[in-house]
Image (cartoon, rainbow, N blue to C red; front, side, top):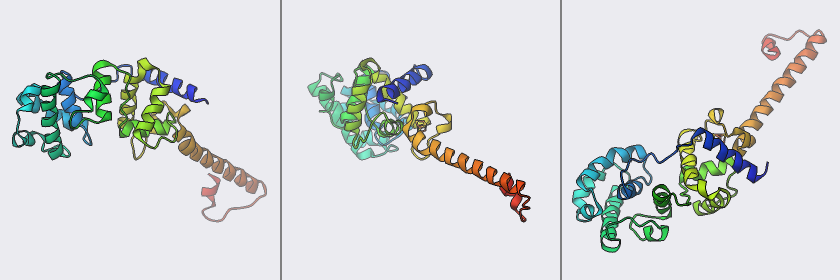
Length: 249
Ligand code: SF4
């Protein structure tokens, strides 16, 4: 199978089975999405969604958040991973939005990456979700799933994976493919034990072919061999000792 065929199968499959995939973060505007994405680093979307309503109520705009003190904001973020850093980042981000971007979330990766707490992955998420720009945010799920399926080859870093994915996915589908891979990694192709039996990507998945399918065919071969040997013994009139019945099954 060529790489082109693999991509084509995967994108068609997702297009048919998850046409409406989107972020699971709950937000009403770019400012809220930016706050949510910063909070979501090393944290689940579920927990972020539990936390943000109170933050958005108290700080409905970058202007409001820029005036918050560390001590005021911290209690809202306490239950999220890395609360100290995230509290500092959110206040710094809001200040910079007000002072340098007129209170608006900029929609270029370069401008976003100037904001405290915003790296390449976050900037890619914001620009692809808000503006459908063809930017691929590679988080741990995207990195793992793309590698397992074989969409990426020997990618050692998220940036290397991002480049390979961008090169091979049609521009108009890149923003959607990001959600497809994330959600697949979150619910099916999970880190410890991928649920391959529930996965429609088995026919093209390298991990499945190399690990699961091969192991199953070895098992099958062994079973066939044992049966054949048992029949031979039966024909020869051999009576198995106690426990031999198991061998004949
Ligand atoms: S077949 Fe298994 S390893 Fe491959 S994408 Fe599906 S769940 Fe992941």
